[in-house]
Amino acid sequence: MGEIMRLSDLQSKNIITTDGKLIGNIIDVVIENGNIKYLIVEKSKFLISMFTTKDELEIKWDQIKTIGDDVIIVNCQ
Image (cartoon, rainbow, N blue to C red):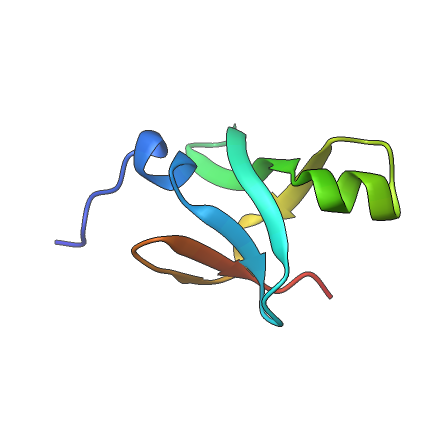
């Protein structure tokens, strides 16, 4: 049986890109047919000011490369 992880465990981790840029933190998830489809991420203040005024980003579950102890690494290309 695999390791069990709660949403609160995921929310405590920083989301970063494969090249090390901080995206932000999980604030919600989208679940479809019992599976997580998207992580809703509140962008870091740097990303909001640099790239867009929208403060949320959807990360598809299949973009996740690694879930570590402190971070979740995602491919945003």
